[in-house]
Image 1 (cartoon, one colour):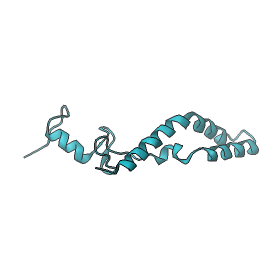
Image 2 (cartoon, rainbow, N blue to C red):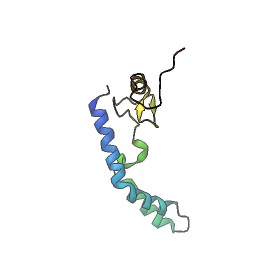
Image 3 (cartoon, rainbow, N blue to C red):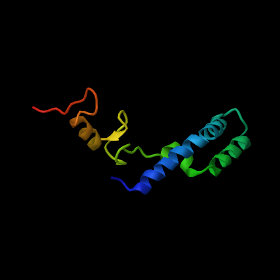
Image 4 (cartoon, rainbow, N blue to C red):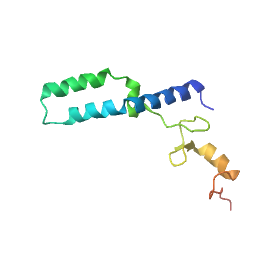
Length: 101
């Protein structure tokens, strides 16, 4: 199991990303718009820099929903390969069985 502090930090980042998503996207459209004057685009860049760093989506780490493991993560199932194998072996995931030959 991952450290609880790392899991909670990631949850906090997800909340901040959701909270600031509209502001960040509005500022980014202003920054990317080449038709606007450079001064206005620069001011938007400064405002974007004032937002919390953890409100950027790239700072989110995909973690297993069950164990919090950061590596070996399957997006489709929102869990790590180890947790996925354990649930599949016990028959908890419909349509998935552990292969054996």
